[in-house]
Length: 29
Image 1: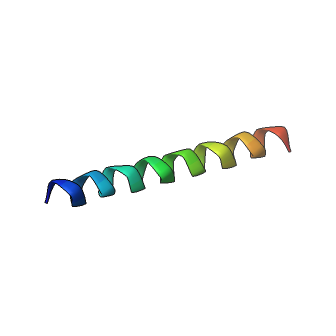
Image 2 (image 1 turned 90 degrees about the horizontal axis):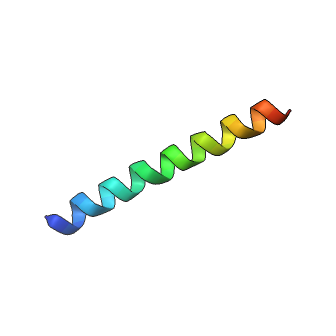
């Protein structure tokens, strides 16, 4: 249970990083 919760959090963090990177690219473009 603890492990799955950690995975969930990691997935969310990855998603946030991905969106952040995309926004950065948008600003440059």
